[in-house]
Amino acid sequence: MAQKGGKVKRFFLTIVLLALLIVVFILLGGGNMLKSAGRWMSGVGKEAEVVKQKMEEKASKTGEAVEKVIETVKPGDKTGEKK
Image (cartoon, rainbow, N blue to C red):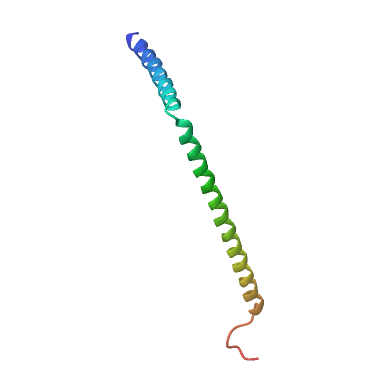
């Protein structure tokens, strides 16, 4: 029974410690750090969107080039074959 009481006490003290850490974080201006982190994350998201668009453009160009090659080389045609 003594160990069970110790576990409850330990859990309670951990919760109190976390609450105190949160209060200290807020009092020391943690909101500004969170805002700057949010701005950084949104910037990273915008950069990822630009990269995604560039990759889609390159993929479509590559797909068009492959289709042109397929059209020029018809099935059954072999290079070097004389008619």
